[in-house]
Image (tube, rainbow, N blue to C red; front, side):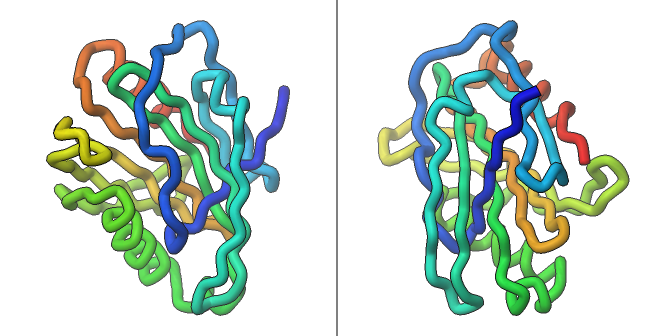
Length: 181
């Protein structure tokens, strides 16, 4: 099974929230974090162009890797980042709350809910959000993101749907149900 590193710290800009062509369900793969902490099913094109970015933050240098699938009215993304120890020292709740705030700013979204959930028995936070103009194009959208803090890494699994059809809802459900730790 191929492994892929997908990291993003939410103090960096969210990249590539755009929509392109659809993908067939049979072209799904399980991607794994480099550390093996987390995995999830995604359309296979998520591995085509993983991106790496290094940012200087108040907490120190953060190197992030992330990938995404763009479809007709849907974006599915996996991301995470290795955190400097000082950032982790502020505690899980503070890290995830700050991550959510930055995430919503970058996505130009409005929070609907931010609730604690369990993923494979571990605490996580699920954000539901919406926006009026997806990437300034006037398309309203709904978003869902799961935030996990595991060891020194923040992981985010995200979906954005601007075309709420049966296929897109099924794709979103498949990704979120497949998350394993």
